[in-house]
Structures are given as C-alpha cells and as structure tokens.
Length: 259
Ligand code: OOG
Ligand code: MG
Image (cartoon, rainbow, N blue to C red; front, top):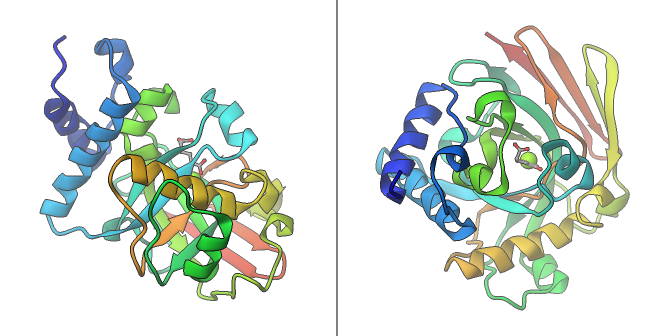
C-alpha cells in the first residue's frame, strides 16, 4: 500500500478513540521509518489537540531492560502526554481502554525550559521543580500488545493514562536510582524494582528525552511533566483489581480498577 502518513494517523486516531485493536502497521505498509513513525505520532496527537486536549508533557518508554526484553524492542522511545490522559484520582476506569497494563514510574516536573542536543544531568536538576511517584497505564492499540519499534512509536508509545501521587519531593531528597519499588496486586507482590532500572538513573531518561525532542524540534516547557519510564515490567489489570505501588520513602499509590 502507498504510504500516506496523514491517513495512517487517521487510522490510529480512530482505533485509539474507539479502543479497538488494529494490525501492526509494519505488516501492511512497507518502508515506514522511525522518522515516519514520529511524524504519524505528531499528526495523531494534533487531532486530540484540535479537539481541545493540551500537551502537558512527555513520556519516555523502554528505558529499562525488563521492559525492552518483554516487548522485544531494544531502544528508548518517547510519546506525548495530553491533559485528557491524566487521572486526577487514583481510579482507573476500563472505559476507552483495550487491554491496559500498569507500571511504576518516577515523574519529573519542570520549572524551566530544557532543549538542545548537549543537555546534561546538571541542566536537568537546575530545571527541575520536583519529582513525584507516578503510575503509567499503557494500552497498545496493536493486537496482543505486540509491535515493532516503528509501530509503537506511531501509537504514541502505547500511552493511555497516567497518575501522579499527591506528594511531590525535592529532587535532592532521595537517590532516585536507589528508590525501591514494590507493586502489589490484590495484596500479592507482583513486581519489584529500583530506580536504577531506568537507564541507570531516571535523570538520564530526562537527558535522553531532551535529546530526542531536539531532533524533532520540540522541548520540555515550564510546567511540563516527564514520565521517565517503567521501573518494572507492566502488569495486566482488570475491573475489581487493586494495585498498590510503594516507592520507598516516597509513599504509595493505591490504584483501583473499575468497569
Ligand atoms: C511501550 C511503552 C513502554 C515504558 O515505560 O517503558 C513504556 C509498551 O511497552 O507498550 O511506557
Ligand atoms: Mg511507561
């Protein structure tokens, strides 16, 4: 089939908004590149923004070995975070979702702009207002949650919902690489990890985020949030589940899954 990035973006937007699966793009369109995939992502997100959604930040994905191994893609990716994806309470409705999975993340919130190819960890600390424990709910629109690098980038890195804990912390309060995370589902431990799973230290994920954005002419703007990537493997959730994610020293998020 001939490549039309706007029509592929239309197709993804339809599946994302209707919460219906689609077949991998790479099975149906030949020659799609990573740059094409980011352009499809951008075009898709523009549709939401034309409907009133605001861009509130960015997410890094596949920044941990556990996540890379589980999906068979071995490099980090990024996606857009829109106002419509943010949960204001820790309750996740299955409405509008296909086969959601939940993962623990560290979020950074920024007070100043970050851009450019040479950003360092030092620049990131200077620009950071606070760090916050977070959960991301990913929901690949592809059948069986199965995709290649190009597919997942086009699908906005599987992003669906996210929630930031009530309590924010100084970025200097904890060694973020040593923050331990325990995830329980209905009281049973299902995943454990530490911040170091994210590229050695979550700050490196922000550095990488800025570098990648710079390639596409974008930046981290004041007030934006960045999700640095899953610390553990993501778990499937179902209505009635209770997921508790404890971040050592930083409190816990209790997420309730409803119909
Ligand atoms: C891709 C998104 C991965 C993360 O934090 O690693 C991601 C996927 O696994 O569907 O959000
Ligand atoms: Mg994630």
